[in-house]
Structures are given as C-alpha cells and as structure tokens.
Amino acid sequence: MSPVFADVDTGVDDAIALVYLLASPDAELVGIASTGGNVAVDQVCVNNLGLLELCRADDVPVSKGADQPLGCPLSTPGKAHGPNGLGYAEVPPSKRRLTGYDAATAWVRAARPIPGS
Image (cartoon, rainbow, N blue to C red; front, side, top):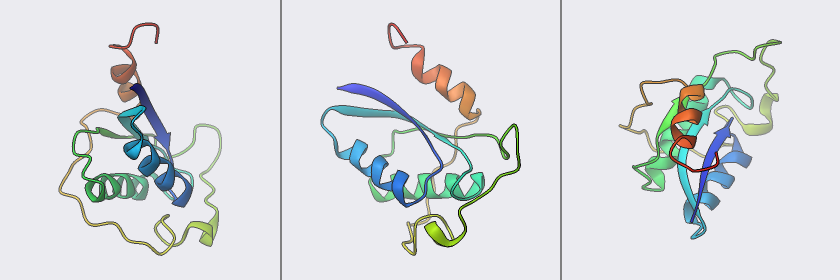
C-alpha cells in the first residue's frame, strides 16, 4: 500500500478523489492539508472533516493551510462548486477536530517516517 498525502481545496472534484483514495486497496491516505481555492479554507476544513466522517475514516489527520494565497487574493470559482464547495450535497457534521498544527507541518510529519521522502 502506498502512502498518499492529499493537499486539497475540497470541492466536488477533490471530494471524489478523496473517496477514491479511501476506497483504494493500493493507497493509504496518511493526511490531508486543507487549502482555500474552490471555497475558503475554513469551509474546506469542514468539507474534509465531514467527508471523512461519512466515509468512516477516523484515523486520517486533517490540517488547515493558510487563510489566503501568498501572492494574490483568493479567487473562488463562484457557483461552479455550489455554496459550500460540494455542489449541493451535504456532508454530516463532524465531531472530529483539525490537528493542532498547520498544513506545512502536516506535510513534514507525513513524509518523515517514509524512507526517501
């Protein structure tokens, strides 16, 4: 099984990719970095936590990335991904919490135990 760390701005497309990874016998989702893009980063965090709740993937850590892009203002695609980024689908509210560290630290923590990373 190959470890995979996902850096996503979870809209419809990334939600499908995450479900695919969770269902794959060849991949182990070792962490998720939530980044703004399709929707603001706080909504991306809600989407990721709710999606993991729905998929019963309790052991996947989710971290929050930067609130804004480094070089320009956040520009979302408007209505393309619906009001919350997942079209008009809704994920269950999650009791899970984000990690206590940022997405950059999550990348390092996920890569460190893997030889050659």
